[in-house]
Length: 174
Image (cartoon, rainbow, N blue to C red; front, side, top):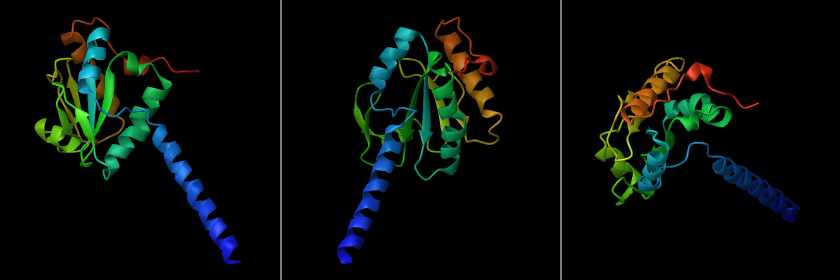
């Protein structure tokens, strides 16, 4: 009887562990692990870099990713208009390379950018300069795509890219 309970308990723990690992692998919004590399890609494509400053405890950050960002990145061609990355600013010990190639913790990077409120969306050129107005917070989910579109379009224009995003006319995967 004791062996059966241990077996069931082990099976249950392993099942939940695999499920949680599988969920982590399905990361639609890539982590900002190397901003120099991201900047290089953005420069080649002549698109802005969109950084989402989030925190693991932030309910609005989860809503933003689950209800807006992930569906747009999964089901549309939004990624043709910008390079998207996430900085999780409450994870001490999560290292990343900044735009200059220096290894920093994500919380230090967020403080350096004065982006401590979450969620905050920032728009950068490949040199690491902010090129559009920040989106701070998530008030009405219905309005966020419009503000995202504005920030991306302003960035594209400043980078000399004639392409313009119309969030209502994005191509959806079939």
